[in-house]
Structure formats: structure tokens, C-alpha cells
Length: 239
Image 1 (cartoon, one colour):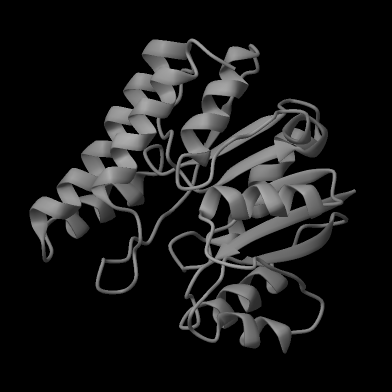
Image 2 (spheres, helix red, strand yellow):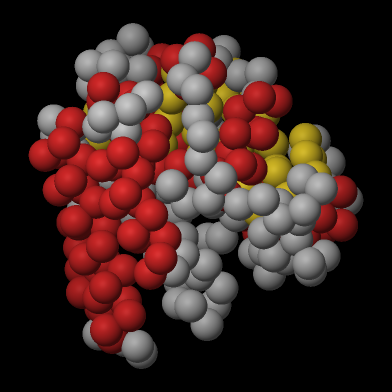
């Protein structure tokens, strides 16, 4: 059994080394790890850093094409039985891997999302973070996630609590069988819509989250939220 860890990265030179070290240290039992970094045309030295790290499969996009396209590229190169998406920043904790893949290993689920909403300590962190700098911007980001989750539940009966979470884990055969059109951050709503439309249950497990600020490099913008909403609406009616 093998777990493919897809890490789309764009200008993440400050965090990529530590992130990969954390991923390498994670104990996944008898499940082997395949670490795939998709450099999305970084303008800093992210690509050069990854080149010098052993046992990493580096895929270099010819130019910046967007997170969704990077993930699609990673999926096409993944050779594992299970695939997990891992952002290149340090917002999510790789130590949750084994917990998240266990339902798939046991045949209890084909899709597992790591929910920040179900994690008690995370709810406290959300409150602390939302009291920080640029309050309105962060509140909008948080509330946007709640809106997307509500839409996914209303339109598709997904019955989930955290639609835009990064930690999405899939049976590889299932994920590879679903045609994707995303290029940017709309990967999350597109895959959620297409999974739910196929009647596949999305299992959720609590996961912690350490949000970074825009000053620290967070890239998602207001327009990405609008695109995500449109994506959920669109795939309700088309494939």
C-alpha cells in the first residue's frame, strides 16, 4: 500500500523545507509514502530547494498555472493507492495522515476530509485568529468557508462541515476516474461537487489548522471565493 502526498507549491521557499521534513517524519505504519512536489512556476528558489532534497519527486510546471492545475498534474504522476493533498505552507499538521487514511485502508470510506470545524481546539484558534490584524479580511475568509460548506450541503446533500479544507484524501482509483477542469483554487468545490454527485459519502475527521496571514504569504483572494461559489453552482447542472 502506498500513499501519494501531493504538494502544490508556489513561492514557498520559507516553509517548504520544514514542511517536507515534517512529512518525511510522519509514521504511516506499513503504508509507504510517495512525496510529490509540484512547483507551479515559482519566482523564488522553491524549485532549487526541493531539487536538493532526497527522495522527492519534483514536477516543474513551465509557468505559474494555478493550484488546481498543479494538483491535476500531481494526480497524473501519482502511483499510490491513496492520494492526499498537502499545502506547502505550515497551516496543516501532517501527523494527521494516518488517522485520515485509516478509513480508506479499512474500506470504510473512499473519500475523507480533515475538518477544522470538528476540532475543538481549532474553534478556539479561529476565534483568536479572527481577533488579529485585518479583522474584516480574515472574518470574510472564515465566513466564506462557511458559505461554501452550506452551499455544498444544500446543492449536493454533501453533509459536511468544512468544504474548503486542504486535507482531502481519496482512493486513488476513484480520484483518477473523475475528470477535472480546475486551474486555480476551485479544485476544492469542483471535486466536492463531482464526488457528491456520484453519491459517494465524504467522511470527515477533525484536524487542527494554523492559519497564516496575508503578510505571511496566504494567497487566496476574495475573487477565489466568488469563483468557488460559481463552481458549486455550475457543477450542479453540468459535468
